[in-house]
Length: 125
Image (cartoon, rainbow, N blue to C red; front, side):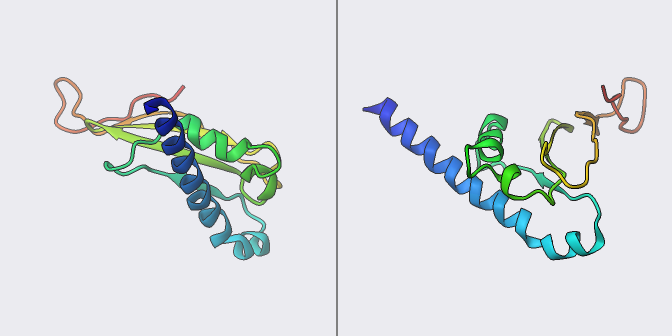
């Protein structure tokens, strides 16, 4: 019974996430199409929400309702999370995008480097 409940909760989380991402993709559609510029949607889960990047991918690539299939004006999705002053970025490029932009995944650190007074950037791969 617990396993079934967990699956239903996860399905509901993915469904809510799907509509949140969809709303972001729709918000500036007219402007993006008018200006003909790349458009990246950013996703940053808050502390109260447990979100896995695989759940984001399931929203982007789901069969006929995959958001990347529907919203070709979106160049990609940038997912990031923070942990102890380190920001972890993952970029997923839309294979159906009308305008492509490449963004590297990686880490940005606000944690002071050893012997340094200020934070530094970690090199991106």
